[in-house]
Length: 215
Picture: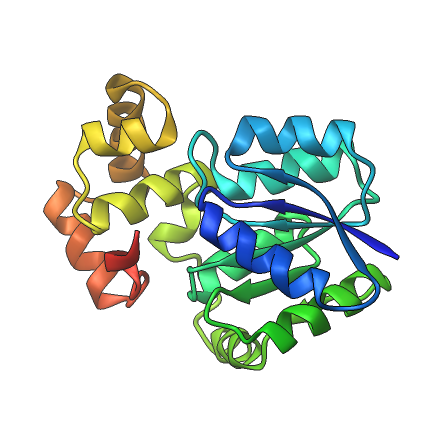
């Protein structure tokens, strides 16, 4: 029996995942979390084989969360289940230690397939994402400006590009507005951009965040 943990800030999503897995033989949902801190507490206190993790929960950058979990519990397999369909997020998730990457539009059969493969020690990525990752191999090898950003900076960049204000970003990330402003300054410096509008134009030109309206 594969023991599964669910971490997503939307109750309906967790309920849906639990329903799918409880209707599938071989899986048992043994715990749930709704934000970064509760996820850390959950994985520390509940033995499991796989964690199904949303990247966009309050209180913690999802990629940073993957890194911490893998540092503390290297044996716990992590399946990222997210609305972010951009290959940039997938690359960062795998580098952080994730074993699989699925978008939330994936069918329930694909979720089961992913969990089955990951729990057996494999790695899973959807066909559509695999194609995007393959296409990215043809991109110039020189580091692009946004690739200089840390995972947290990249997350803040995405939110700025989506039109969120400093205060909105601070609220969702559970940090101060001053902290977000500091991140914004670092982003502008690293990407060598003069102002916020230039960041938005850059994101549009490079088609980085095509799902930004779904934040």
